[in-house]
Length: 83
Image (tube, rainbow, N blue to C red; front, side, top):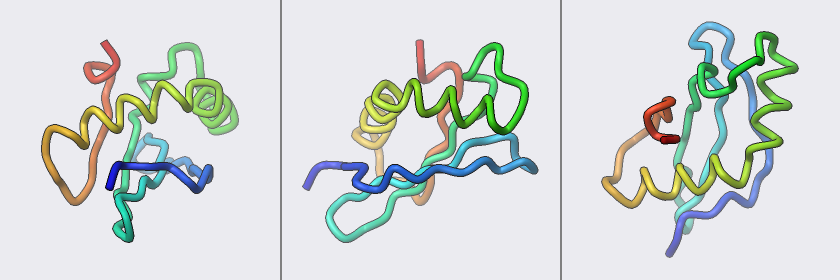
């Protein structure tokens, strides 16, 4: 089964400076984190979440690509993943 994102929820982890979201591969949840450095110009929780929402499709495509390389317990997406 392919990785999907049926739940649009996301949250900001202030301690880690990352946006969290969940993918699903069949019945398995796959956690993803996006470092906030990815969102140039954003500097508040609301701005990070809005930037995530605006770039959701591209972020999910990057997440699918990262997931296709190897199965991990958690994925952290950085600026390097978006180049």
